[in-house]
Picture (cartoon, rainbow, N blue to C red):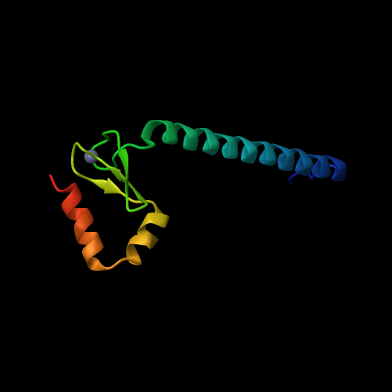
Length: 100
Ligand SMILES: [Zn+2]
């Protein structure tokens, strides 16, 4: 036969578990922040394809992050929306501008 804990022990035990769970969740959130910051320091403004440092060029008011190592280009969401509003000749002119 298993011995039941005293009702107060059970209550305080649950409080202790809940307190420890909250501390663990806070640690997890803090680690996520630290990891995100580490990733940003490592990869910010570096090419997703080869890791080379990106250079920002402004073309008709739209920033384009360009890799002069592999030829890749990165567009932020706002830039993509601006591109979508342009005609196809505009996009062709950008492709021609960055062609090796
Ligand atoms: Zn690259």
